[in-house]
Length: 218
Image (cartoon, rainbow, N blue to C red; front, side, top):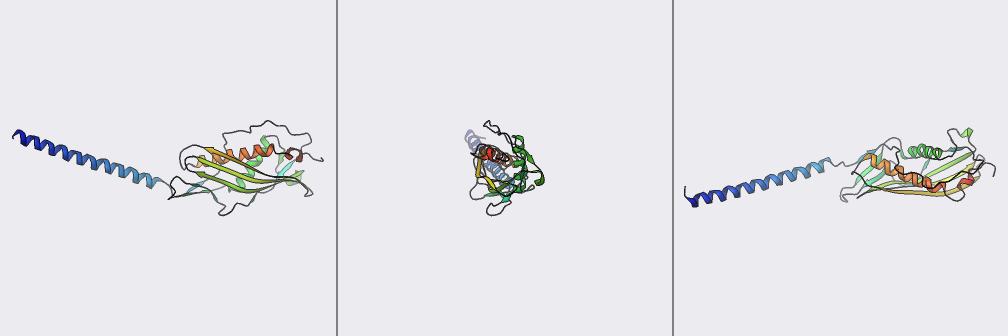
């Protein structure tokens, strides 16, 4: 074979190899993207758990004479589908709805709020018959938007009444929290809502008039 023929064959082989390599890389990239798209869920159901990473920031002390508090069932006044707790907005053309499993958001809030208040010094009881005061909780916002980060918010109206129905305190309290983490992860939704609740409770504990409303016979 002449040198020119060998050179031509070599160029052909390299050109052919380059084309095959390009096709292989394209196919691999296509498969990766296709698999990623296939793996991305079209919805996510979250079983809400409570595990905050923040704590009550402001030191405070209850006045003497604190009464026993019973938390009534939470009145869920959120608009729309009450099982829905957020959205993944990373792809605006394919928004992923986030829903709650069990417990329902209102039940989760009721039980978790009681634990948080109890752990911060309030005398929360489990029977209305044993209570001096009634706490009414109206839930208006419990939501997480996930884009670059998880952004959560909980807003609720708190009302304290004595056993005769007299209103001793009422206020709206709200907490927000931002969390970074792996996309579309149930535990991240729970954690950002846990931290949002902690922030709302911290604001409540320091609200003017709240502590005094807990004193029986004032």
